[in-house]
Length: 71
Image (cartoon, rainbow, N blue to C red; front, top):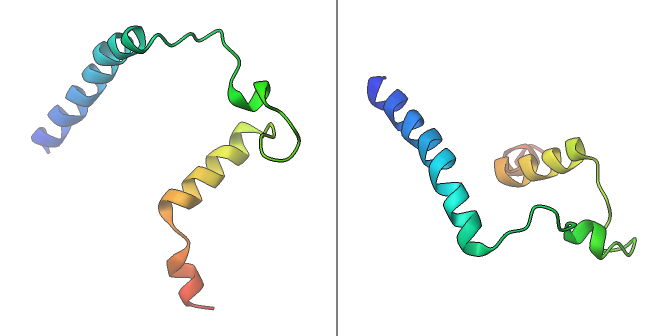
């Protein structure tokens, strides 16, 4: 359990320290609009509520195959 907590702490520390470095190297501008807003055409790029976007990503990662096998 101690090793698990150390690994979690290292991941959080790396996120806090390494992600700003990568952001500077990549030249990311947080003020730019996202592609969802820039290319909104009502077909491919459509604004989606954050909760719905989370659920879509969760289902894609978790996979629905075990449930489809039952039907």
